Image (cartoon, rainbow, N blue to C red; front, side):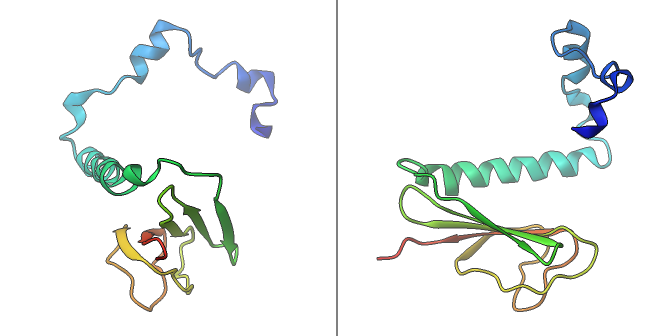
Length: 135
């Protein structure tokens, strides 16, 4: 990364082999109930459960298959063919304005905002769709 070319900046990077760095990096479970922390904890729990239940069972036999498209310098669409032939689609609006883009086919298995219909994706939103394998 360009910003780490400066030796003075490099010196500010914590040593990953230092025990003090490890201890500072550990989760403080007493903070989970704090405002803002619980929401992030629940989001990660939801996403990990979704991956375990809906995506991981389809990974066996997966071959390199990913592809992506940048959408008008504001969004990103990523697609994978899973091991069972199903298609996983992730579409994200990475801007502070609504993004009109068609969504691929499939069942919405996660949406960061209310499930989108035919309208634009809200700012800073993401949708994950799972498309069944073709028969």
